[in-house]
Image (cartoon, rainbow, N blue to C red; front, top):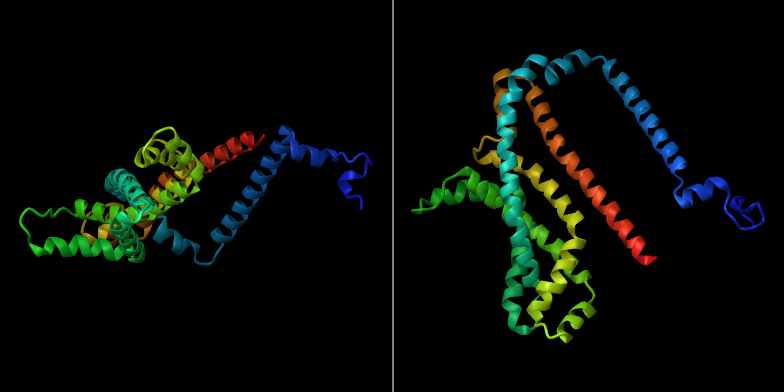
Length: 289
């Protein structure tokens, strides 16, 4: 049966379908314009409904008070720098520890069974525990032991807790990347005289890391958000500062400021992940040709 796209009788797709298949720039621009217009209409409609709601005035005074916004923003901004510092330090160690755990779980042979077992237990424990419990136990429990020389900094314990939690998740991302590398790659490296560890270091791991960059960045978006949990052990970061400002003014505007700051950091990261995924897809399609 002849479909609508083949009514010409020649089997050649119609103009609109051909434009979609070949990536016609004009058709792409029309699609983007329509998407923007429909999004704008939706936002305006939702905004109109909210502004005309019966409780809008009271809602606005509690969540969008200009005076509270102006007085709280500088303090929350300074506290947000603590979140950024925790994120940067934790990210560095998570990348290293996560890769180490993934390699430990990928070691073959019975001689490495204890190492694989340790890595499996580590991942199971820290993936299974709620992050808030790990932060509270480390941040409030271990310093309470009073051991000489043990750090008492909330920054240290909060960052350590996040490293332990997210290295377990990231190790599984790394391991998926290592498993995705075809065994023939390692076999070819071994045939050239490389040892098992050299093949893993120079052939398997570099390919695995390139393949898992987008999911790794997704985990780091979650890590940035979870830095707010560190305030539970007394560190004054953005959410903790917002809580202090709320207690002083009995107004929820500081929480809105904190939410906007997190969005200002995580949304660009999300778009960067999307760009990396799209670039990787284009490379795969180009390679398939």
